Image (cartoon, rainbow, N blue to C red; front, top):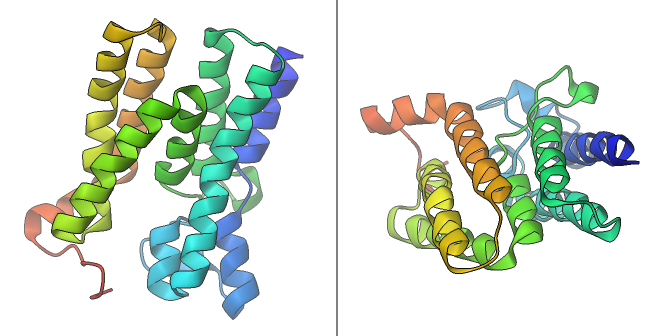
Length: 198
């Protein structure tokens, strides 16, 4: 049963919401445009705000659903973390799209809302602050990823959050930053687009 749920986590993560948004809204393959990501930011740039919001919410839901499923079957923290990782892997490397997916931000948010809603909301708060101040999605995503392990560590120190949760926060941070490596180069060069100048 645990392995089946692990597999389902991958399938949930690999649901191609951004790709489907491109096909349904404009008949395009979003992977061939902009960053090539199927995430909400690339959808925003090339399809529009409504589609981007829909993709964002669906990607968050994928992460939440995986963890709720694990908790429904009373899986321990280790298995919840394993399912978190399989869901992130599914989102980044979906089998349906030749292993070319999103950047794990929205789905990662959903996962941490499922694991610990306080940590998820605090991380979302960092994202909102950074996007409000700088209007650069990648900078907000990277900043919230960097803040995630610290937020989890503070929660770990003051509650019953387990060590596996701290480990997955570090892994998620690494995955998100690695997926944003091209954005980081553009940020350093001052060439990363802002919202409203996409």
